[in-house]
Image 1 (tube, helix red, strand yellow):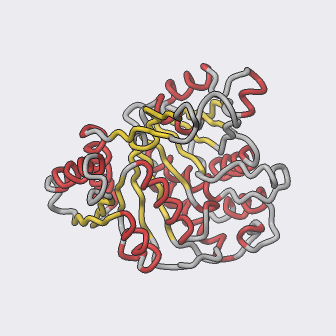
Image 2 (cartoon, rainbow, N blue to C red):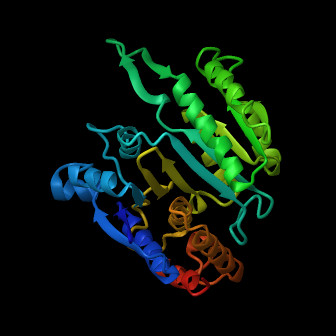
Length: 335
């Protein structure tokens, strides 16, 4: 039975990197059927809505989506389309791998292979209690942490470690200062960790974690943390290995999963064929793992590495003079 996935082409460079990614997936012969749906500016122009009901129905029906970057217009409506998608489908686990790749102008061309697992629905991004005083001089917000939210994200991290053969989970927190919210997260994390004696667990305060990542990133395996800290740390990790052009992301829930490139829409280069499709391709590899096709995912990642090693048709951000589709064809040729 053919698996159908929802495909959202996105805004800016989104359609270009999606075309490149689908070209490579077709060459890989993954046997997927695509149901195309709109979101962001493309949807707003067609339907007057950033997240049309038809798009939501498609994701709900197919349970898996591959998504290019989206633009959230400044002004009214959602604070972020991505945040709204996570809330609507309860995509509680944000999974961001960071791995050294050759020929990427990286600070660490080897030795980095870690995953940040970020709680995706609570914390500072829950948007509860945000208020500006009448005089405009004081702003407040509520940061919410629950036992349920903490337990399921930490358990996801430990289960991921077991499933992928990783040996250590680092719990990142600020419980020394944020004694209620971060304190609850750490307390629950310790309780969950005790149930996984085969996986080493250590704890780091978030500021120390950032310093350690910059100095010795090879010491990390899986990091699990709260929403705001995870947002910052995962981008820091992307910076260690060449930037957001090589940064995929998975948003996992019980009933749906959305895979994406985590970078923005880059409207300044849209339509010029300069965009690097690697982040979305690596997101597609995460999707293949999720769909039970680990061999296909491994082949895809290996073809990307081989193309980077050969410096074949690399896009300008990688120091080459190739274009988006030429790079994709070079990757497809090495599958």
